[in-house]
Length: 145
Length: 135
Image 1: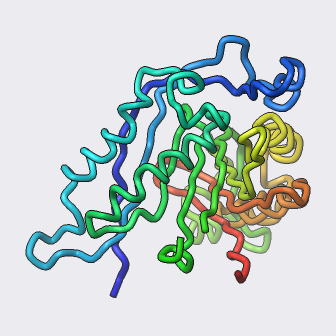
Image 2: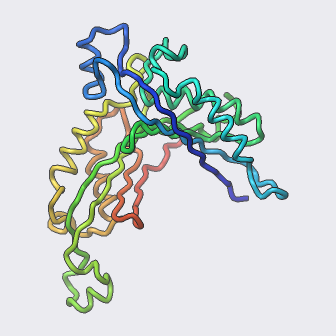
Image 3: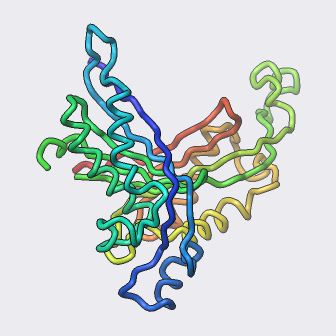
């Protein structure tokens, strides 16, 4: 059976700052380099969710995109038009780098989407057009964790 | 188990020509078509690295460091140049392989070069990917 993957995209506009509050300004500047800024900066982030599942013989689809959209909206709404470092409780304990935003979205999407009979195999998070982070759930361990 | 990669895209406008020295101009044209004439592309290079995310910084890799390595090893030496002066074969697939080889030798052990995607035109792209290590 060929594996069918669909990818759905949503965008959200947020502010964030590459800054670890437990470090000095100088240390933050050193670690983050040009990603560091005093005020933080903003992006039109784009989140792509990759979904895998069986094609339903009746509908010809693996999942109704409306359901996917509502989950993507639910997960990104708390981020959209917010400053992530201060407004999103999850990022009180970690820096909202592109890496950590991708991981956060993966975890938030995972339970919601798997409950609809399809598997989330990964996410891609774009921070601007020329930089992105992809996080994939490894197939072998998928059902264990 | 999760696997995270980080990708940055770079611009690499350059010249190339596809021709075999042993063939005549006519023969080269019959094999390589219009690519047998010297021409250029706005190549785009997508560099993907994989590794673990540092718990304190939240970074898989510092972007400046990746930019510096890509600039030093690929952009500065070849941007605006004729790639055919440097490589025996300059098809998209051959260049992607060369670029992957060059760049992977530059990375330290904390990250691995996962893949290189070379976009030659909007229609043509070439991906060289490191085979996944056995778990």
